[in-house]
Image (cartoon, rainbow, N blue to C red; front, side, top):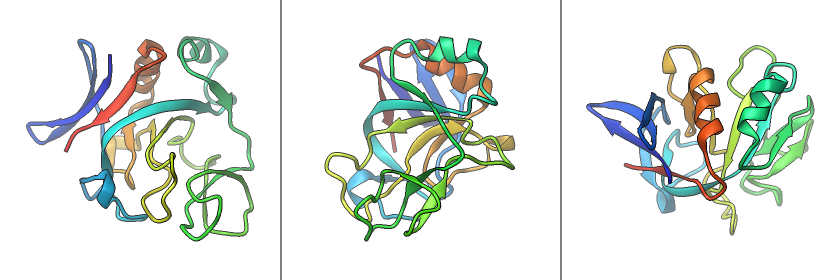
Length: 176
C-alpha cells in the first residue's frame, strides 16, 4: 500500500489506507519530476521510496521511535548533519557534515521543529542529476501548515502516526 499525496478541493492531504491527514507541499505547487529545478519551491510529482527516517533523539521520544522504526531504517540526527544542495558539488543531494565547503541545508534546527522527524525520499537519488532538486523530504510542518520549499510536511502527531503504519515496500506517490 502506498502513501498518496493529493489535492482535494484545493487542500492538500496525505492518505494511507483509510487514514487521511492534512499536509502541505511546496510553496509553488507541484512539477513533473523531470522538470524539477533546484530552488524552484515545487514538489516533484512521482512515486518515491521512503529510504530512511532521521530523528532528533532530544525531541522524539524512545516510545515514539519504537513505533516508527518497524518497517524502515531509522537513525538519529546529530548537530553536524546537513544536506548538500549545491548542484556543482560531488555530494549534491546527499548527507554531509557541516560546516561544509559548498551550499548546504542544516538538518539540526534549533529554532524550529520541522526536521525533528524526516523521511528521506528517493527523488533524484539514482542517479543524482545536478540541479534536478535536492532534500525532498517528508517532514514536520510549520504552524498552520505553511508551504515548504518542495517537501511534503504534516503536523508532528500525524507524521508519527503515518510512519507507524508504513510497511517495508511503502512508496510515497505525489500527484499533480
